[in-house]
Image (cartoon, helix red, strand yellow):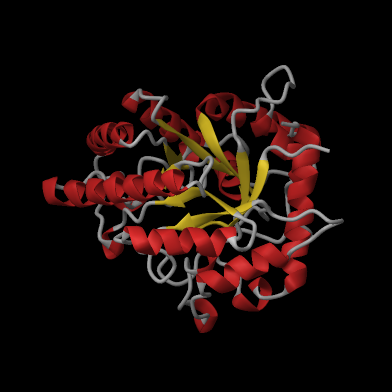
Length: 347
């Protein structure tokens, strides 16, 4: 029975996209922790959670005492903390990575605060592995006004973020999501990572739901790998496309989200449209989750990489009605266990 990679649930779906479609309120962190800890499949449970450093879950300005309290709340449920998300966007105190000096400084300030929190949680002993997640906090519509200039600005900002991460011995993972300028396609994501050129500090976060949209070139048709009328029932063609995508991005991948997608986009609240997250048993899902995760978690020869110590389920923008059902989390945990069994290892 494999015990790695560890299985984590994401807490940010309790915040992201809330207050929009359906007017769903935020789900409190303790409720999410309880639901995560209560999920069980054949005696197996989640090992931890990944967190959003944003009120009301975890303040980016949390004191040491508040972080100690957070650690105790997590540990009391037999969970660990893994990856944490830096709130780098303008509405949360940050600014676009391709913005002016003040906006870039705001972006980097949020990165620094997130690294400080990540380091503190490691020192407390509740965060054995994980990265700091970020993105460009820039819109695609603004980025396309000056692709070369804006890509260069984002790269410079990310280089400065790498310097900050090095101070705290943290690693940063750039989120592969079509709604972020300079990161809206797989080619542009690889280009950005290469421009920054610090793989020891900046890598890629792959989410199976978001990267499926990379295949389609939704916000960058020039980088599409499959046609807009692609036949998703053609398993061989889908796998060939996934091989091309993962060949380019796998060497950079340091954080991984298990997810399902129906090849459509979705957005609620203030969140722009991005790859729709679906339940693992969604009849419209285009991914064979356990099998397709292997394109990311195994190398070109089919060997398990063992480079990612935990994987996380991301179900952003699920309605609260779905998120508060215990069966939802049991289904998700079962899917995660299948990935661990297929591509994991023992330590």
